[in-house]
Length: 379
Image (cartoon, rainbow, N blue to C red; front, side, top):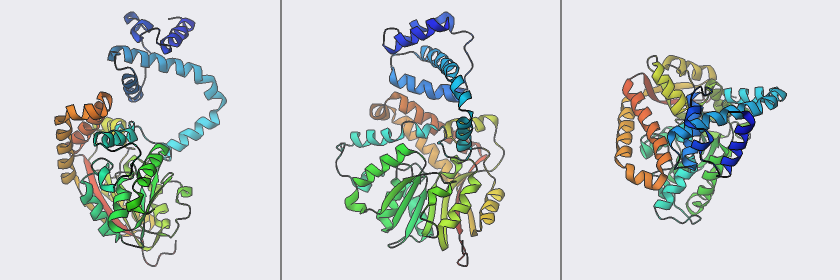
């Protein structure tokens, strides 16, 4: 297609005057510009959500050509602002941008959809327990949080920090259950706004004990005001998403009081991954590869100054959990599609299938790591 004509057709399509099949007739589906499947899948999901009547084939063609035009249109701007582009790349490497992950696809909408389905008004008061079935993304639910609270010696007058607070469910659970203060650190602004709004609707229970801030776990500025002020730090399947994750540990060490404790649930590499497993980890789960093996993981913590490190392999329990989660989700397809919509259901099913496959393969490991900042430490 002539580029000028193509732009006109795209403009007309935006005005709903042309369908994607008219925009790109079948004979133009050959020799499409190459696009990494990771990005094509993401945009295809958005396209299918926005235009439910479009066939997948037409949507794929539209996505590829749209990306191609976007690249051409933005090339001069990218070259002009090369410094900004480099800065953005550095941010991604430091973990300051959210990784591609099916779990992050329209995340807060999933929570609001569930609340609506349960009959809660859009702006009315809530209780922490109202959201427990769907505001936590880790494994084993409340059992894991109770274990974290025990390890961290959570209680009234204590301050905890949640690295990667997500929907805010774990922070709210800890604040309510142990009557402690919890500061959630979350990379995604949308999630910070969403979990803050939900927590405010639970203020009668929480009384300001769960607060959230936007920031990056590898950036010292995100820990401002918390140096030496935190009794315990935890994260629930967060560290696996962070590039340069070894930078997290010195910052966590500095934030903890002497004799403070850490509790993290994370992934590790038991044996080398296959190419397919690497694809699932990177492109569906949003894992920052490579994952550390046990020895390297423990060494990073020791280098940061931690002692009393315990590395508890949870692989078998988590494999059972994700297999059952996958089975139940697929078995309740009709309900989930009705509440969340087809596109979101498909996205989450792909994620649950991936995790089931990965843990069943035996190369991916799950771990609970605990560690202590020595009472004699001064920094």
